[in-house]
Length: 145
Image (cartoon, one colour):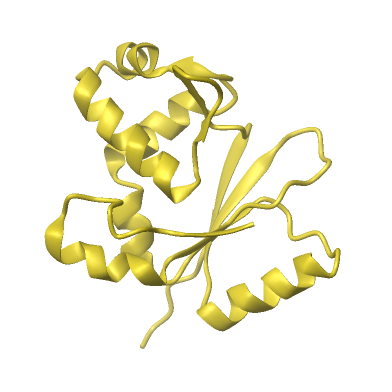
């Protein structure tokens, strides 16, 4: 399943145009510990993985970004803390999430909405959301220009 960010992902006016090129792809595996890998990938690499998945080749749980700036714009320190708290926690309400991270409910709701739109969180039912992974692996390299 390939998901692209919509222009309504953030209220950050001028950043809206940048998010059209983010590709997020989640694939499931049959391992006991469900780990999602966050990585950088060009459009061509993402398309190639999509075709391989379409042909039945497992791609693992993978969330790809076109650039580090897009990854870090989506995964702010507050959102990373929210994901850390939700990792392995099962489905919880936004109110419960706000209490656990000791943040304002509206701020957590905004973060949850952005992570839902990105396909990182999932709606479990009408009032609960879930980060369906037990671990997060971040995989990218910074090289000299």
